[in-house]
Amino acid sequence: MTRIVSGIQATNRLHIGNYLGALRNWVDRQHGNECLMFIADLHAITLPQDPSALRRNVRELAATYVAAGIDPETVAIFAQSTVPAHVELAWILGCLTPLGWLNRMTQFKDKAGKDGADTAGMGLYGYPVLMAADVLLYHGQEVPVGDDQKQHVELMRDIALAFNRRYQQDYFTAPEPMIGGEATRVMSLRDGTKKMSKSAESDYSRINLTDDADAISQKIRKAKSDASPLPESPDELKDRPEANNLVTLYGALAGTSRAEALREFAGKSFSDFKPRLAELVVETIAPISTKVKELMADEDGIDVILRKGTERARVIADQTMDEVKAMVGF
Ligand code: AQP
Image 1 (tube, rainbow, N blue to C red):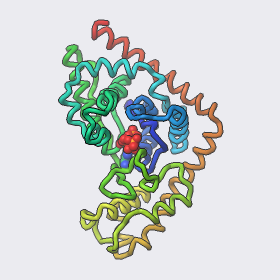
Image 2 (image 1 turned 120 degrees about the vertical axis):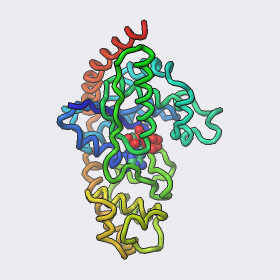
Image 3 (image 1 turned 135 degrees about the horizontal axis):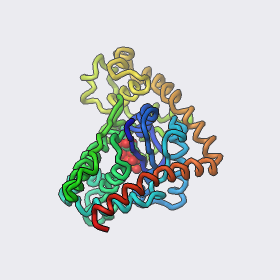
Image 4 (image 1 turned 90 degrees about the vertical axis):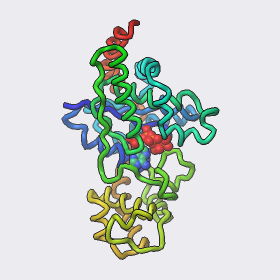
């Protein structure tokens, strides 16, 4: 049995990139393994959040995990901030993480913007250290994430080994990133060179897991594409980022591949392809979106799931912190 740990920031509604890059892989791996899937509210406040929206987002994310197929009886679902050991371990790990390692993180550069060094908060800079704590706290062996988080999981491995060296114990095991599926980096529907993101300004850049059929069809119809027909092979999509993204989405949702999608659509135009893609997206998303609405109508029910998840997580986290504190000398 493998211990699998991952989380998603409570920054906004989840989109189809979060689903294909992370959530769907969690669902596939939940049985026969021990899984802890948290809602990263501590990570969310590395950028400003409205408190009442954050509270709602935490519940809605929990509802979305369940609606997407995560079984709360099997998987511990909890809000990160309800297990204080995440922050405690992050401080200890931060004390042995060289600044040079953090300076290499591309997500900080993207999120902080060009004046980042002066204006971004310490939390945004230290985000990868908290992420290392999130997983090491539970001795997680596998971390299922999208491609954009690969660098952070690699850093997590380095931090685990740095702790072992500092305290001369073979205590933490370096976790493995698990990046799987056909769509490990879904791109924006407005710009095929930018990652689809929860916090991107335009709602037309993404398909949310709470969108209804009309919204989905409209977003796909308006998605940026190009004037050429679809080619015969994936190689020919190399310089067509928007086309490549839409074909990747089709392959991932159909459970096949880009090559297979192109066998079906080679020579066709986007006006033929987009309605078929929209149908497939609606088939996947509509049941999730309906279920989220049902679950959100019973907030107490969601709070029970979160509380039980926290209790399970705390048992493991508290033991790790007792051991870590003894090694550190507290
Ligand atoms: N576009 C994407 N394609 C595939 N996977 C993705 N993930 C995020 N975007 C894509 C994966 O979803 C998980 C949760 O991500 P997160 O919210 O914790 O952080 P993020 O990577 O910063 O995600 P977003 O959507 O871009 O959120 P914001 O806008 O708030 O920063 C991770 O496994 C991630 O790889």
